[in-house]
View 1 (cartoon, helix red, strand yellow):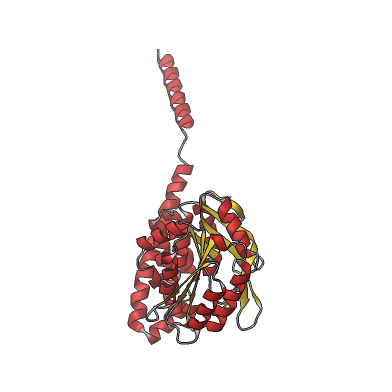
View 2 (view 1 turned 60 degrees about the vertical axis):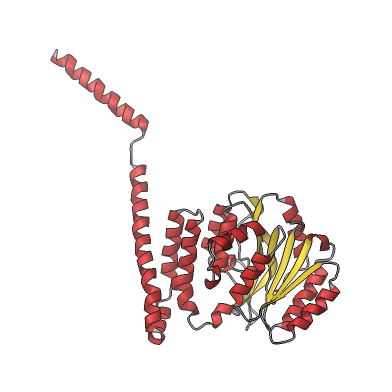
Length: 349
């Protein structure tokens, strides 16, 4: 890999937004042309996206600028996975065509990637804003409009621990595409281990978790971009809420266990997810798609039941360990019994 970073943009029928994002990129990337490559993947757009791509390929002729156009629309997740798997640099940063990113971000990212030799994942902190109202959107369980509350600016060496913290605090944060910069070799390996990742709308959480488990992790203290809330691709799907709550999140948690996260953590996350599901979502789906709803929920219920059993067993084991006498106590008791036996013998004699 001759260069450091691929900046990839998956897009579909949003030529004006792509043009705006490439305008930002052309400005922000100045001075770092030799470190970066650009990749734009067009998901078979029917508007003038190709004209915008050609325009910027000409304008940015001092940097490697690759483009791809799929012969048909593969769906947003497969287009994202194409970007991740097509990178030929050490790191891959796939950004949304509509996410506002600060001009200083590329400078920060390049310098951090050069400083850290064993970096596997970099999370850029971000704020949230509602697409419709324009009002700030605050992350659940976190104070302030800063979606990652972890303090890990100089690379945490226990990547699993920091990812567990971030994932437990906000699933939405770890699946925000533009906030995640992956080690290319690791993310490709993760995709090989889960070939059907594109079928799961939050599989980006698995990719981040896999990378975090195999190296150092940075989470920035400051915000470098903004997430426009309320326009996620999966929110347009009729069965989105049902699949997210009852299938996709549990599936990702099980995949995290496969790549080395503790059974205890994964079971706790499954139970937490079960407490947060909205029963109304299931009841609504049951009325509209009864067979599909039942097929989706039955494995979920079985998994939650198994998780309850495992967590209770673990707590019982820890309780037993906590009340188990130490070696010193056993020795003291043994010596005490011996002394008592000797005393009794003397009395008898």
